[in-house]
Length: 217
Image (cartoon, rainbow, N blue to C red; front, top):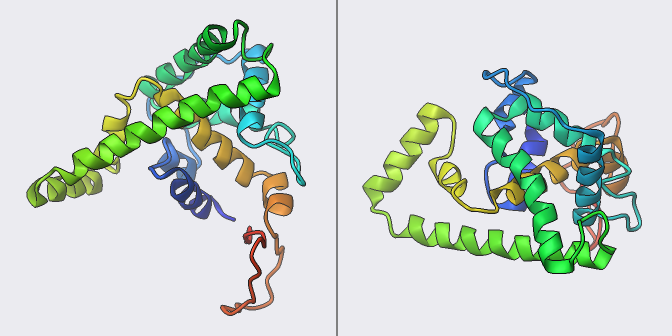
């Protein structure tokens, strides 16, 4: 799976534009040149959050794929300063939410408590996206056309920009980066999906059985 396919795949999974996706495709740092420091504790927290989103099952999970470290690189190299700020503040909000819900930090919580906390954030994000969809449907054809023109001109989806008003937007970032990091890792490509290192020819009619893994390439 190449970078562009990975970004498209994650966009389908999360139902929105991948933040920093354009810079990821270009393989270069964001034009701001701004980066915020991640501590070893931050990386550990990111690994545990990612592993709660994508835990080990029949295949290794996000922590085994070192998704936490991937996330720090993506945030520093591909996020603009405002999104970096939202993301870093979001890490603190995760612990605040955990302390409020479970009386202890995210790392101190049990796997089930971690799961339940993230499911709360997932529901909030889903509800907000439905609200955004309703807002979009209320627009006139001219207003929708203007949004498309603006997206084509700036390269950024205006609806996704508006999504940043969501108080728990940091969770959307975390989920996107977890999926992107995992499915572009060696573990994600070769174990979570079917990997063909050197395809001999294109065959557009391969039998599929329910439950088969997607192809990585």
